[in-house]
Length: 332
Ligand code: NAD
Ligand code: DAU
Image 1 (cartoon, helix red, strand yellow):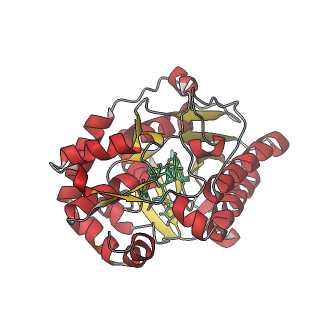
Image 2: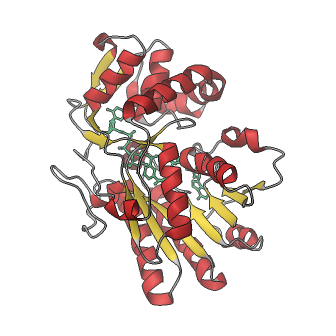
């Protein structure tokens, strides 16, 4: 297959490109990425020189950039390009509306014109928070942050283009991912790298909020399956069955790193903080998918990766991220 991967220099996109080229040696990938603060060509440095991989810097909101990429003749687009950090969406939402809604519109237009399949990567956050039980793909969308609302907007456009124009599109909504190459603004890499730097970890509120932790490679396998076997017009939830409160998660990280709870800095809660996300993933299970990596195993691998790849995250933390961090967390 020839795949146009958008946002492939980010966390999940880069893991996906590596996964696809490993599992499907005959595939080719064109990676279209704007290289925002979250996009890092170093995430795919190991593919330099691989004739099956090419990169184009460009914006999914630009008609010209998208058309140039479509001229390459992909069989499908897999769209990871997005603004993704909830806290940033609370401070400055506009970029979220632009990329996560208008960008999706641009890609849908291109798919409509050229008859190309779209796999749109979305999130469990579009359903909002749930105290007990799990959301199915039929649950209503009740997003609570500007990020989640923008992602929900993109999802609704995908639905409309399938129904109105017969575009061949599917949506994947996954739970919280973690693993190598995740930008250290997200909780797991932030906490691990802070501890490696000798800092404390800023835990929001009372630490009781719950997330379901999915190892990134498990998600890549699910996305790949939906790309090849998912039914047009359908949504597929992807979860891990690894729910933990943030305090439980923090304790696991501290234990793995041989540190104690004095390393926790309790900080004010995130506004509109969703209490719990949980999705029912029986539909993707029917396609033949199951998560393979437990949180214990995945965290072990992740701590190890950040320990061994300081050259990857140190420049990030001392660059753009430093200003963001100081404004947000001060000297923690
Ligand atoms: P990320 O922030 O690490 O990377 C996003 C990438 O998109 C970056 O490379 C960035 O440069 C690129 N990008 C941003 N705006 C662009 C634009 N206008 N045009 C082209 N490229 C652009 O994101 P991630 O965590 O890898 O998330 C990927 C996707 O998965 C997103 O759609 C996100 O909503 C979704 N998702 C993420 C998680 C998670 O836990 N990380 C969970 C569920 C769903
Ligand atoms: O559920 C999928 C979503 O997961 C994705 O769609 C988003 O792109 C991704 O950012 C993630 O959103 P969360 O808000 O759940 O992830 P984050 O890593 O920002 O926070 C996870 C939990 O940890 C959340 O309850 C807030 C808490 N937290 C986070 C940070 C950054 C802290 O307690 N302290 C922190 O410093």
